Image 1 (cartoon, rainbow, N blue to C red):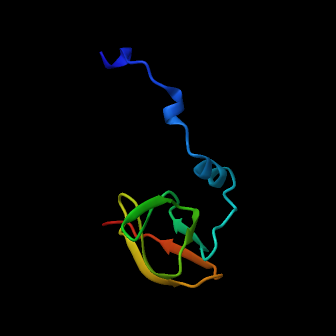
Image 2: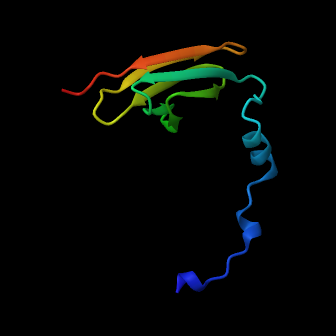
Length: 101
């Protein structure tokens, strides 16, 4: 039975690098810019460059360049924009999602 297999807890620890970044969310890496994303209604999924990154409201750190942002929630039409991020800039996105008829 799988439940009888002893597990080594040391193999499940988060790496030191991940822990230090996760425990200090306000620490930003060089060349990253904060993007504050809100939606009406709250709780919509945020996808950046085809990767799910969280739900609204959230602030994410992005590298300079063009990024495709998609915000979606069940029962609502998806909102999509392509943004250009510059080093040291800050972007505030507010998406109003329309209900699907």
